[in-house]
Image (cartoon, rainbow, N blue to C red; front, side, top):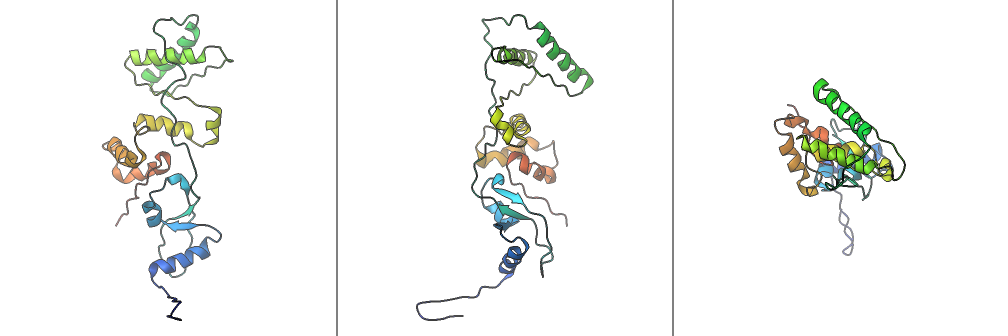
Length: 215
């Protein structure tokens, strides 16, 4: 429809417009978008939240829908370092009991193929950082790959932060530019995980691998 010379109004119709109208009805009060917009936005995944699927009038398969949460800041991965590095000029004294606990857990992991965990607890100045630095040194000396990670109390507020960081370090994508993370992850997973399953790592590593569609 065309109105006055100084003012023009147009009626736009089409599949996308119909989809938008149905989305407004299905998800009132939310800023929502379809999967195509989500993938092409070039925004981090933590700025979106997947919405539950809903039936929409005259649309047989609307696809995945996402809520836009706004431009939020989020620490993706922690740093791969320890609070203190081992000083080769100083021996670690009176820590045989603690080191033996680590060795026992290590042997159980290597020989029995069972996951092990050792927790060292102590007050400020107890020497926890020095002990971990020694364990890091011993592990690398024996030819094992060590994934060092330092956590802070504030990190507990971000869900799955520790496992995300450890897995990112394992796949060596923690320090690469965000724009190349998906490409690096694809190379690391090649031959280990079938390509159609790479989309399962989207939320864990803040990537946007499209889900394979079976015909």
